[in-house]
Length: 135
Image (cartoon, rainbow, N blue to C red; front, side):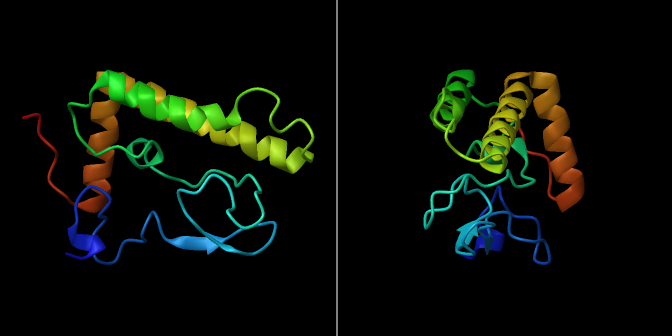
């Protein structure tokens, strides 16, 4: 099965792959779109324009378990809390703040049933895929 046939991250055959590679702004190494850090140089990357499901590594579903959403968020957000980036330059600190803000927005969207439904509808409209149903 190809990525375009594999399910929730599919945007159709001509859609850009949301997890496709791109260059690190610091060292130029290739990084995935979901990467928060460059694995070559450790730079904090700016957040990519991802849907909230992809950002938190969750399946696009209407019936997400709130505890699982919270666990996913906590796992990612932990990397950006505290003074971990106090000794980095302003661009790195700004990227860390932007990553945390993007994670916060994803959490708010996925834990609110109405916002989650709107996000799913927007994704369905942009991909032409049928709406996910609650089993």
